[in-house]
Image 1 (cartoon, rainbow over the protein chains, first blue to last red):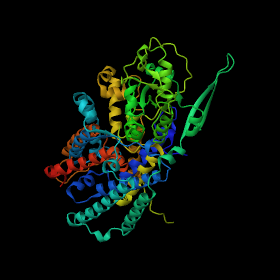
Image 2: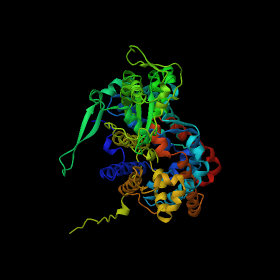
Image 3: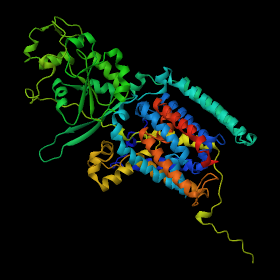
Length: 437
Length: 183
């Protein structure tokens, strides 16, 4: 079993249980906030006058608890981190929005979810906050077109986590965040004692034990580390549907079969013919991205129009980009001169949970053999004698890149092409609704 | 014959229990947050639902307006149902959950929580204004204290940590100037 559970990743009418699951999660959320006292605006506002730091304590305890459990589960290989929604970083709209939220917080006395806990327990100010919220969100929708470019691009870094920012192992960052939180709790208690005149000797002693448990768990996360790419690859499964046509008048039989990654390769289910790779460009249902994993030198000699050059050695660097909000219908087609490097790239990408990755069958050599037959601009190009494995099988007199006719075959000339369709779109979760929506 | 004193217990008159200790509340909230990620891959949130409910209202009143606004179009364009998103059941679940905890702990009471030196009306106006500003900021930052600070904080999202510090920065920066509201 792999977590998160694929059937719960997105709400869908075809699986009504998802509404129940998310409803129960929301219920537990609201229940916990109310019982922590967040239905009372005075308790929330007191945070900002250093009298009572309940907000900070609850929030940071929740963050570190969830973080330690999450990265522990990731390290043990139970939870697939690439399937976990990580808010993409839009630095400047995030900071400006955050400052505005802070102003709303101290004036209004709530944040959105605490206002729900407040209103539902009969607090009139909580109800007014919710009403105001509907107005604020509507004003945003009306004004967003005025700065849409800034909103969508300023300081955009995609899926970026703190371990990547600081170039540290994720376990070390987890430990540092826990240490920071413990220090903040200590500071918060000092403030409550001095400013809030609270008698700290009445605080339960078990909180010291809790801090010890938390620290030990964080150290365990450092110790466990993260699963290697190889371990993740071995755990992959792919679901394919196969349609078996029946006699006339009978509906075809549709089978759903699960394969391992190695089976997908050995049964050649991920290899698409040049014809299919080409036709994908003109298919409304998909958005193909050609990833050329050869050296820059080979790429400069000849490449398919629109192909992006990412040499195999650097493929891991682009994974975060490929994972960040690709439209659900994006299909990645990797290619090398033959297939060896492309298969390596495929393994890395699928192990990193990039969806819909396929390999160009026979690579660029096969593409040239297929579309180059009638390409007169290729006249000066000779076949190479005895090319080594995964080398270009042609000798190019000049580095003309994609300026040959066959780099961008005419859709009219090749309108009729027969091929066995291998691409089955795996629709990922709806990313547009992720995070806070 | 003696009759035991009849204790009348209406749901609104349950004995009021104290709030749980903040660290305990935090641990429980953290476990809820972890389970949300573990089972569904999504964290917690609520402000997105506000936008979606807005989009539903606009779509009902003036569908052509939705078509002219790219932001609303993303939520409610064509035959899209703006409520068909995980955050909507979380929103309504949170309302119910808050109510349940209030009922269970004897805290259901029509009242206004405010600082000692302002009137109810001032408090309502400020709560409304605060709501306007907070949700405007939350949509700009693509998430509120739950969707960004809590959920993004736990997954170590760099942007979410920036948002979290900005929220605290904005609130602490203004706190002194509005101290009359709360003290």
